[in-house]
Image (cartoon, rainbow, N blue to C red; front, side):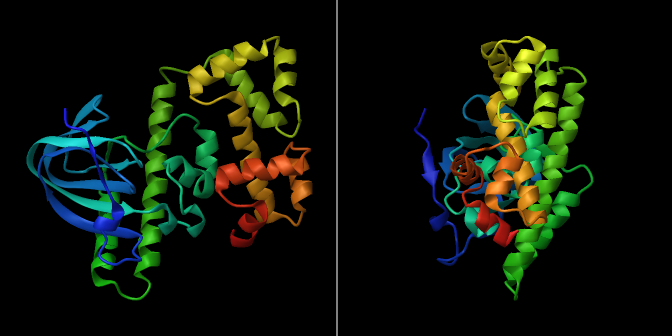
Length: 290
């Protein structure tokens, strides 16, 4: 099989300083490729086989839409009059602080942290969704019209439309997760861990306390948590603490050190490091822009 090619954002934008492009396409078959931007594709007609990472194949048709992550390899084959609207965007179109982010999880960390923490292991990228009520299509059409006219403020209207779509997509992820969870739920030990961490996140040794209280070894619960959620128990704890720290940064006058201690980090330097890893900015800057 041919080696995939990388499509660059620079070769798709109309102006040098553009951070997004949205346009309709009559899409023919295309070989494996990846790109250095996020792609939101909305199918407006026809159908084709969409192949993701050479492992997942699904027929896409009118009303389907999906987000392709940075670096993901995909292609179209067996296209039959496939028509789509492609929205290509850089992460900084959502927030300038995201410049340099290379995974959709980074956007969730900054803009939709509650979803990011609440639904570990689930991501809205590289998944096919269906626009049952046409709402996504209406938003896409408005964004496309704004981009074509380029009147004053079109960038902000585009951004607000994109954020609305991302939230609606996360609703779909949550709905699907609830359906799946009725068939495949977390084990008792993992559910206990999630509940305990959410209640006692302020405690510095909360994971050790949980293991002692419920008589689990640290190695066992760490392994089960990772197997079932896709992330470690410590990463889950960090997500809870980061969400709480964001709430305090936005809604209180506590100092950074006080917030660090309030969410379970005695070492404020370590707190700043974790916050920087999640949000690509210092806590003080987050407070300033939020």
